[in-house]
Structure formats: structure tokens, C-alpha cells
Image 1 (cartoon, helix red, strand yellow):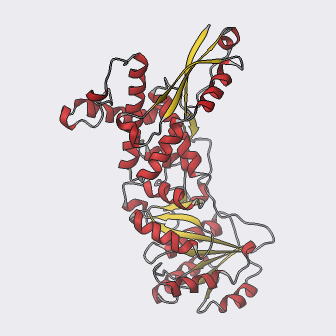
Image 2 (image 1 turned 135 degrees about the vertical axis):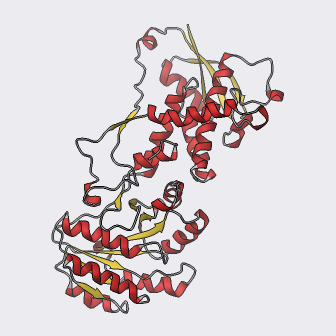
Image 3 (image 1 turned 90 degrees about the horizontal axis):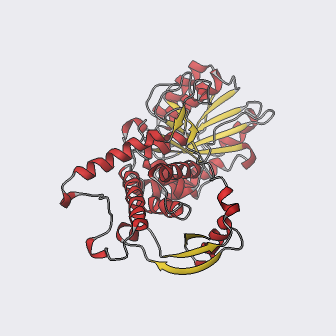
Length: 410
């Protein structure tokens, strides 16, 4: 007879797990409610543990364990400059395979440092339970659970240390906890969280050329985030690398310097520039530039607190049919999360947008990339890490972001 324990949020789910692994003949011989204890009460709900048994374990014993996917294709760190602009960020033959083992170093060093710390200051111990919570029922299984909890707690702290909001860190841990085997080791726990991060970040949305269709691309966002420079970088790659037929529109007439700056880039690239003073000017401009592939529109940096200013941008965007436009919200990665929340909420009333993060070179933590993705569910697109045109821009790499959030470095 084969006897095994299964844990799930409900008894029905625990039974389903048992039957999925042991077969439909599996029977429950014992069940108990497990309340979260120690650190897990921060982000775990009560669960149900069942003990299931099956008379004939021959078929089960022959089943191979499912393979653990511990490798993903690693392309380029977010803050590494691509050669020739962001068009060069597609996987190349010399791209390295990034093993999950590289992430273990940071987590294990964190564990080692905590183990060496004085007992009064120690954040993580080999046993995460208070002495008051220990009882006579402690077994080898309980010790294994404690080790898993310690590992998850360390990963949780690393995420928060990299400025991932606790709400999203808790949600991520909770989702992983429901799928992990009770005896999961640090490597498999870390691998699961790493891959879950990549899935949540999603595939980045970037500009493409559609034959026979002109596309108007609006860049919106608060003042000072680097919209004009970002447009210049993208325009350079579209023109030089993709050989696209492009034009520039300057709708930021509130700052004369912005128009002058964009004109300089237009002259260098030998592309036309049209100044848009009012949203009504867009109708004629759309008609005049209908034979271009892509038109990049620089809008004024407005305060998200000023309803009239945001209304003006909405009117400008709505002059172009939805099927012919794309909108990119440009945000600084160095902005406080609370401010980013207010900004994204204000601009979400204007139009659906993709996300560009600038100034990665001005912050050591990139948690806001994950935070805003979770908050808005808007597609990620590009990231910039300097002022150099066209070099300091790349397509956001979910693998690299996940790696950095878990302490794996650049």
C-alpha cells in the first residue's frame, strides 16, 4: 500500500491532487486543517492536508517525475546598451543559456549572512517558528516545511528589497505556494518563482511596420521623463535599422526647446517634422502624411492632476482612428510608486497604452517595472538607461527583469 500526504486550499482540491498522482482509486484516510504559523501567516491562508492511500502502487512507481525546467534563454540585461539601437535585441546565436543556479548565489548568501547574525538581529533562522509554537508533534516533515518557509521568506525579502510592492510579492508567493510540492528544495522554489515572474511580465510590445497602413504613435507622460529623447532613439532605429518611412509631429508647443530639439533630430535623420499647435491641426496632418509607414507624435508633458490638460491630449489622440494609432506612456523608473499609481490612473482615462520606462541608470531598483505591470496590466515595451541617441534604449527583457528582482544582478 502506498500512503502519501497532499495539501491544498480545500479538501476537494487535495483529493483531486491525490487522485491525479495516485490514481482514481486513491482514498482519504485522514484529514486535518493546517493554519499558517510563524512567517507564513503574513501571506498564507489556512489549508487542508489529507492522507491518501492506494492499494496497488505498481503503476504509480513506474511514473517518471515531471522534468523541472530550470533553464531559459537569456538575451540582454535591461540596462545593457544594444549594438545599433533596440532593433538588435532579438535573440542571437551568441546569446547565453541562463541557468537558475546563478540566482541561487544571492539567496544563499542572504541565508549565510542571516545565519551569522546575532540571534536578536537575525531575520531568518533555520527554523522559522517561534519557540512558543513548537510542540511535541514536530517531525521530519515539519522540519522540511520549515526549510521551505525559510527559503520563501528570503525570496520574499529580496523582492521587497528591490522595491516590489508587498501586495504583489504576497500575491506571487501565494500563487507559487499552491503549486509547490511539500518537499520542494530551494532550487525548485526559486525556479518556480522566476518563471512565474517572467509570465506575469509578459512578452514586450514593440513597434512594427504594417505594409500599406500608416501608424500614428503617440508618446504621453509627465514632464521631465524624457519623451522627446526617447522618440529620437526610436526614430533613429526605425529609420536606420528598419528602413522605415517615418515622420515626426511636435505637439509639445508649450516648450519651445522641445520643438527645437525634435527639429534637430529630424534634420539629422532627414525626415519631415510637422508642428501641431491645436488638436484640430491633426486632421490635416493625418491627410498629408497618409503615405508614411510610421508617424511619431511628441505630446506635451502635462500634469496628471490637471483635467483640462489631459483632456487636450485625449482630443489629440482621438483625431486618429484606433486601428491607426498606438499610445506609449513614458514613465521614469526612478519615480516613487505612489506617484506612478496616480499618473497611470490619470492617463488610463485618456487611452489604452503600452509602457516605456526611462532613467534606469538613475535607480538601483527596478521593482516599479513589475509593480506598474501588475497595476495596469498594460504591455511593457522599451526601457532607456541614458541620454545617448540612439544607443541607450532596448526592448524590455522579462528574463533579465525577473533575474534582477531576485537578486541575480544585471
